[in-house]
Amino acid sequence: MNLLEILNEETTLSRKEDFPNWISNSNSSLKVFHKIKELNLEKLSYIKKHGKVNDYRKKGNYQITQVEVASAVEMARTGLFTHGSYAKELKAYLDSVNDDLEKRKVERVKKVGLRANDKETVVKKAQSLQQNYDELKNKKLSEFYDDVAKKMPLKDKQKLGLF
Image: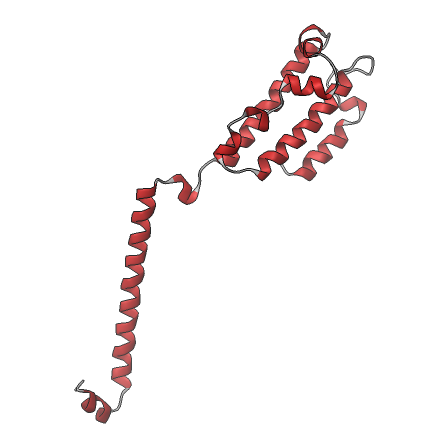
């Protein structure tokens, strides 16, 4: 899912009928929902820009914390995630967003190609490829010289001692 798809999804969710049923205009749930979406986009862009395992040592870099959401909407964390009428659903929604971010992080740092192998395997593979290349090069050169020798006039072959 790229950034444009996420933004398109964001605009379709902005219509009232597409919101989950726990969101309401009468409390701060709508504001919190939008802030989580915004933080999700920030974390997705972080994941997209960082591909090394070391970049993900702190979960706060790629996951959304309750404290981060609470400070972004300038409310107390306990008021949002424990005492509110929508606290259980909000916590479940935040967990699902974080699960999605975790999957994307794992997919991003998944080792593929040469990075999936250890150094010994990569070195052995490189050596075998170099050896195969050298053999092919020598074979081509010998074929080239044989072909040149066949096409060479008899006088030149005698001068070179090939005949």
